[in-house]
Amino acid sequence: LHSFPTRRSSDLYNKSTSIGSMLHLQIHVLALVGISLAQQGPVIDLRDAAAATALADAAQNWGFAYITGNDMSEDVVKAARNGSRAFFRLPHEHKEDLLADKSKALKTARGYVGLRGEQLDTSSTGRPDLKEVFDIGLPRFGTDSPHLGANIWPASLPELRETVEAYAEECSAVSARVIRLIAEGLGDSGVFNEAFEAPLRVQRLDRKSTRL
Image: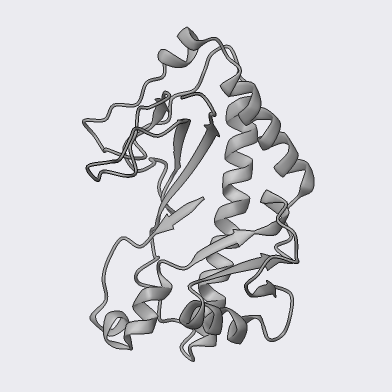
């Protein structure tokens, strides 16, 4: 899940250049992706008393961290993973009925984008991405409307909405927890409050392809 700030604070951006970079800290949740603890880089348990300091240090000196102790439900994660796989196994024509409206946004517009429908590498040698994606948005806090409009769901997979939204809400809670801990580690627990008062919360399902 991606949580993006929706407003700038002069105080936030003047604290230091390192604090600004914290907003783009990539947090990899081990429980979700099954990455071995033996991987290079900082591994931080969110339950640890030193987690705040460790996260701030990782952001400043590494640019990323692997986190454990996120307290996410294994059942919720498993259900979302199974739901994602079921979605991408749907017949092509069912997914085509859910095509994202790219006139609203080049990325993360609500809905489905097929194989080669996006291109991360826009250089002269870049090629369209070998992936399919399905984007949804969660409502901003205090509202009932997600950014970029309502989500669209496959009629042939009615359980997908419940499983994916439950997973996205838990990821959102982890994101908020990490942001709060980073702020504490920087010595100002409220430094990100204004920027993330009503974040844009985006959940993307994707499936990579080996087809050329």
